[in-house]
Length: 152
Image (cartoon, rainbow, N blue to C red):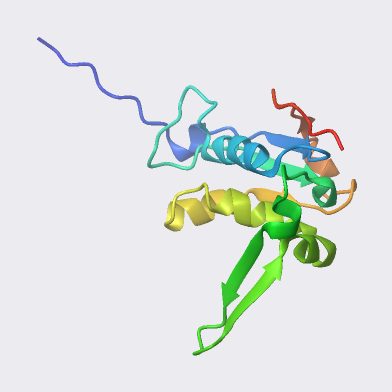
């Protein structure tokens, strides 16, 4: 009895598509999980867990991303310098005013693998605070998720 071989895509066979996502009034966690799935390539039939087969994603209007309940006042982002006593804390509102791209980047990065494969996938993500982006020559296609927008 002959066994069937598992198909593993070659690097040359992987076709990468560019997608653009408007983050206006989308919940942060649901947006991040959908984007992480596209960066990994889980929407493709040739998905392989140990290969980077995902697409490129451009997120615009990061400053308008929504969080539910009282997270905008209560959520705290931490970072550490590596020195004793070097922990820094910043609230969601303050980070959104200072650097809104970092909020989405941190959420998506946390949903990717924690190894060199995850870092390669993360490099295919571009986040912009406003509606303009510099990848128009790649002809990105708009991507709509089946996520309800948060009403304010």
